[in-house]
Image 1 (cartoon, rainbow, N blue to C red):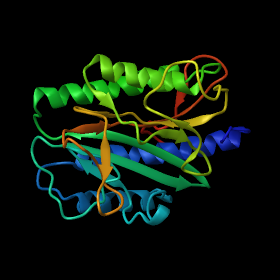
Image 2: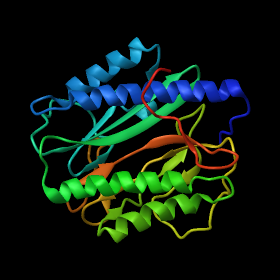
Image 3: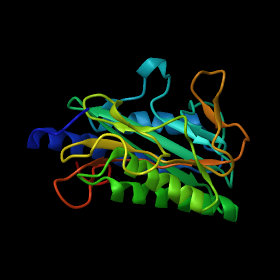
Image 4: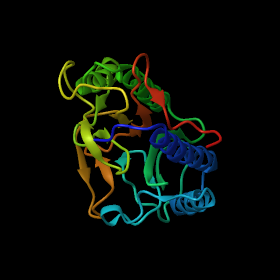
Length: 252
């Protein structure tokens, strides 16, 4: 579990996450019909290197890409390749970088062109779930208060959060304690305190919550093949008031 112990640690976390956010913003703008997921990956790699950072994903437990690109029923961890993006797709992009020994991590789902109304609604609920989860990341609350914010937002809209994959603590390592499930009753788990840095990432399915990992060992799909969205911010819990969102695009 990472707890920011100095202003310099916080500066480094802000920098790594700002870089990750800048890369995500640029790659998201490049999403368009007939662009391949491999082309997005190459662009992400170029941008990360240009900012003096390196991918947190490439080589992590054997992952072969620089970023993750997941389309429609693919929930997370899609391996970039020759697949072409099509009009109406939901394209989830996950970017992680390492800068000065600290990890930045963020994700977003891009709607390609004019999507079906239910896909638009799913994306809107995913964004709302992330915002409500961030609102719950306050000193004195517990981890499951974040989980409950995600689950209650999704279920109230008629959707289901993924249960098999979770948000996480983050800092010098990409995955640290505590795990942050997307479901749960409030008032349980570790108590949040100032200085904790968390990657909060709702994964919301249009259909059921069940998922499966494909034969490539990475790509996670919904079992019912209905679409999914993925949104993520890295935040720092503050002494009082709302958490600081670290993964916002801008000047590092």
